Image (tube, rainbow, N blue to C red; front, side):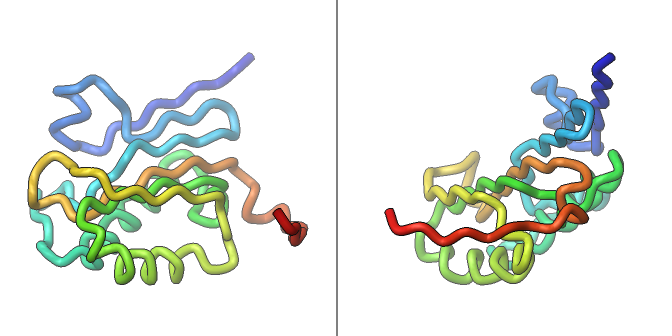
Length: 140
């Protein structure tokens, strides 16, 4: 039987817009697009890298709630509305994912207001981080 776990993190929008921070379906873990807001204090830095750090703090807590870690991430999507912020934000994202190397998509569309400088969404598979990886280089 398939086990589905839905996790709420206290974001006002989760209730207002009827979504979960995390949905785990057996070993697959889907983390919703996550902003750089501290959900306890409701504060959000104006610095894009600080927002990225908070995004990862929120994501790592969400993953832990269902027994997964950042090492289990197999796909990421990073949204950076101001293209000028992309180099610094992606340098930090690169540090966080060093050695994990998930598939990644980065886009620069507008978000819900000028305060949001970055949002990150991930997909993980519990146990992927411990499984080891085979790296293959191809010429495309």
